[in-house]
Image (cartoon, rainbow, N blue to C red):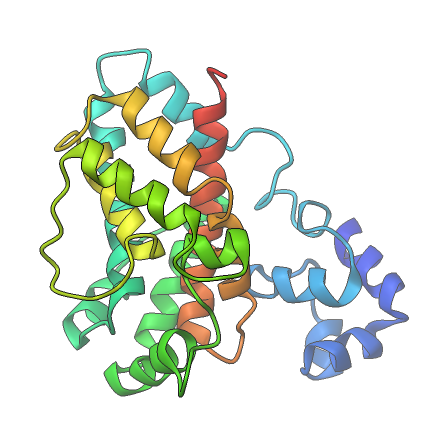
Length: 269
């Protein structure tokens, strides 16, 4: 018996065969589903127009995420260090994967990621599978095509571009001023502008770890000024790059994590 979300998607596209063709898979595969598989939710949403919270409400609830609720509770009690450590690690992982081509050792470690039944947990498992199924050469080609390219990459991971349509605009100046305010001196040796998503996530990793800044208020202010207006869109665009499977999985993790952070920071608004 099919779940309601799957039934709605099938009806929306005109039948099981039509859904299978739209997804590029066999009709028997779709016929065997009782619910949309986790790794197919985004694709089914895209071809059917049925929201992910309808397709898999267990993975994409409309209500508060359990992680965001846990973050809110953690800030109200002494045990905040562990939650902030985990958040810092999440920011740091995404920064690492987005700033340079992952080494074989990094891919091995990503392949060991664990997850649970939450949406973010399932995204971690999908990322682990993607890491296990690729290698340094393949992921290097993905990285080049996405972020470097001949002339320019398929995605430009900069706040200025997402917010103004151009590089080196006012959002970059604002980020640079925040770097000055936080006493950040770059030592990465690259020429990447400071509004690169990986550099902003690296700052958030340090803010969450409390190695820089003045605590929660500084962290919240940086997120809301420099990430909230565009990071979710960037990760959604990255997630849609299904011909780049490893980085599409990175995009899914990033999109969900940014949404959780946004939700948690909004609780005291």
